[in-house]
Length: 270
Image (cartoon, rainbow, N blue to C red; front, side, top):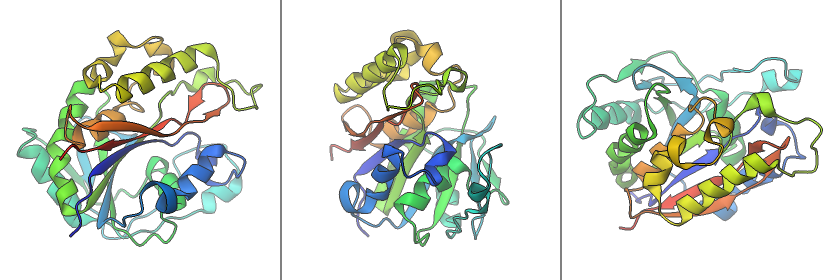
């Protein structure tokens, strides 16, 4: 079994990523297997912003269904399906790691939930064959960045088992501030400032600052009024192996002035 020495944080942006060829980020996701990550993993664990629970939860489903968890989008999007096999054994292993080394007292199993659009939209572009087993792990928006970073550290052994760990969220996420007059791929100043702070903090290895982003980052509450789209980043950071992991920005682009597609890889030092 080939070890996976990278974890990833992917900004999945708008659900229209699934159909809009004009989005620069769509080409990035489609180039995944050729340019970003050539190794085919044994299975995939996605920590998605769109599954937010009081306690960590994993979905133990043999055959994954497609959840169309968005409203008032073009009809063709509701016909899209990503029917990958479920990764039941991986889900149970995640639960074991979180309750063991992670020290969590409760991790739930959901025997019905499929993939939300934070998982299936990127995966549909990255692995269109849908032949790699997938499971999801939820975030806890009532918790902190450090909590999710430590959750990731507990999951680090999965890389030795051939598992690709993906945090799927958004580098910025304030839907009330989307500017539909901006169509040229540019960004408004407050969003760009936060995005650049995040990039510089990650590339300089200041993971502690990113864990304490609400105090350290400029325009933190403007960029993330709620934290659920940011916490998948902390899990990916932690799962890479902690403070010695090396971050790289693997994509950046913008939609509607405030929605960043900035995405990162984290490479383990060992």
